[in-house]
Every structure is written in C-alpha cells, then in structure tokens.
Image (cartoon, rainbow, N blue to C red; front, side, top):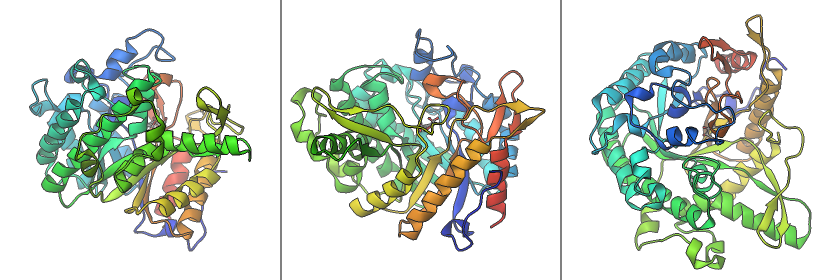
Length: 442
Ligand code: GCO
C-alpha cells in the first residue's frame, strides 16, 4: 500500500481529532555535555547491554538541529508534537532549575506555538538522573518526591506554553524492564524489585499530578501507559488462568491503581518480599483524577501455564515487524474496548503506535510500504474501537524519525522519517508522506 485511507464517515477524519508524531529526549537529543548523566548513559557504557554498543551521546543531534526538526514536523501537517523533557537537563544536582536546559525547551515550545503545533510534553521518558539512581532510583520512595519537585519547577518555568502534560511514559517499562528483568536501565534483576519500583513510579505520577493541577490547570494532564494484550495459547482452564495472571501482572498493574485506587487482586497471592511498600494515603494520591489517558500499543503476546513461573510467554507468531513483534491489529481494538468496559476512563489519546521495519534508502527514497500497511491496519482497528463507543481524541505515530531504540541501539528504525546517522540527513519515508496526506485530506 502507498496511501492511508479511512471510511468517509470515520471519526478519525474529523478535524477535531488530533494527529501527531512522537519522540523522546534520550532517543533523539544528543547534546549530552549540556546535561547531567542519566541511567541510560551508564547502562550504555556497560558491556553487552546495547545491541550495537552505541549510546545517546549524539543520537539524532536534535539538540543542535531542533529548528529544522520542527520545520520537518510542520511539513508533515500534524496538529501536535509529543516530546519529552530530559530531567537531567533541566534540574541541577542540588535540585534547582538549570537555565540553559530550560531555555532549550522554551525555545522549542515557542517555535511549536508559532507554528500552531500543540505541545504534548512527557516529563519522564526513562532518563532518570544518575545521581538519583545512586541513591536507590525508583526503589527509593524519595525519588517520587524528587519527581514532584521537578514537575513543580518545570511546569512553572514553562508557563502556558504546553498543551498537555503526561507525567510518566510507560511505567511498566521503567519498573519491569528496568528493575525486574534488567534489559533496560538501570538493569537491576529480581522479582523483589519490580513491584516496588512500580509503586514508587505510580506514586511519583500521583504527586506530580497534584502540582500540575495547581500550576497548570488549563493543560490536559495525565499519564501514558503501554499495553501488550495477553492471549491464551489454548482454551484450557490452566492456560486461561495463567494468561489472566500475566495480564494483571503486566498490564492491569499500572492502570488499576490509577482508576480503581487498588492493585489487581493477585497482589494478595504474592510473597511478602516482592510486594510493594504501600503507605497509608498512597492509593488516594495515585488515583487522583487525570484529564486523559495515553495508550501506547505495538503488539500482543500469547501465554501458557507454567508450573514454576505461573505463566510463560510463547514465541511471537508471524507476521513480525523487524523488532520481532507480531503484527496483530485486532488486539488494538479489543484492548480499547475492554479497557473502556473495565474502567471509568477520561478521553484517550493513542500516544504511540508504529513499527520497526527493515528500511532501505535507495536513490534518496524509502519505500516502506510494510510500515504503511501496519499504520493502515491499526488505524482501521482504532476506527472499529471508536465506532464501538471508545472515546479516543488523538493519535501519535511512533516515531517522527529513526532514533536510539534503547537496548537495540540504532539498529531498529521506527521513524516515518529516515535518519542517515553518517550525515544526520533526514528523508521523509513513503509512510511519512502517506501520513501527511491522510491528515491534510481531512
Ligand atoms: C516504548 C517507548 C518508545 C520506544 C517505542 C518502540 O514504547 O517503548 O515509549 O521510546 O522507542 O515504543 O519500542
């Protein structure tokens, strides 16, 4: 496919629906000498952690190329740009604003406003200042209060330049990948860490919401969660029970505290040493009102029962993207419908959706029809969910441009714009053109 299209009466074609592109600070900025070290710097410097042994020192050099990048964003015709703030760039070691870092973002925000592009700002997309990790990171309850302090200072400094704040991006990844299985920074491994880190992250979210509501009552304030829906390998009771456990452990763990003020019931079956340390009042803080829920969706997983580990994830089924994730758009609509049934949700934004593909640039052209197919199928799935009554207000493609894909380094390309890391040349892929045509055709 070379174009994207939707049924004429689709709510996705309404002018009120917001389309955007998304990035994250560590993945694109570079400019590392202008900020404090973060946990991803340390992780990248550890042997064997990043597939191509790369790091985020230069990335897409957005730190110096941000003006042309915003021009590029504007040229795609989008309504909004989702970006994240690097905490170690804007807050000094003794907890004050770093004016150089703040100025960097203020200029970006002003340029976006000048071009009428709404700024969706994420406060934490995984780049925890290393000095906080040295004090225990997300295993230390104090980090949640440090985050609140950062949110307080930065939201005052940005004033009315921001359209929407998200506190955290994907606390599942920070907690589970970072502190339980160790494939993300800071690379801690142990069941006794994952739930504790998750609780402090959720607490940080709730505390930050308090100051955002006060300092910035007119922005849309919320959180971004990722979901990898769980499907059972068979109809057997054992597999179905294992799958439901996995869903609670991986997905519901992060949403239920926010909307129901409690963790999934499986918490009571867990050994005490892996349970989070919940202090009185925490769940009230965590479940304070949010103006929107951001949902990131990429793929699903299939589970079966496992005697030792309760559940076991099966190898992904074809068709796969270049990062090995199954393409299964049906899970996207089923997820949205099921969350909508389970919880009393505010408006939803799809804050990330997209695919890594094995892109080739030939004569200055990237003909990524496979990525266009992915977008088409997922926009169709979104349309289906909205027709069934799910209130979705916007959609952001992940990602604006190829960038540092965490443990995969620069090997996996998620952009709708191609980045040549030799010369930092940006080339809009066929998917970027198709996305632009869809957006501007409304
Ligand atoms: C995430 C992050 C992004 C990733 C993207 C592809 O969802 O993991 O928000 O930073 O790059 O999802 O893995």
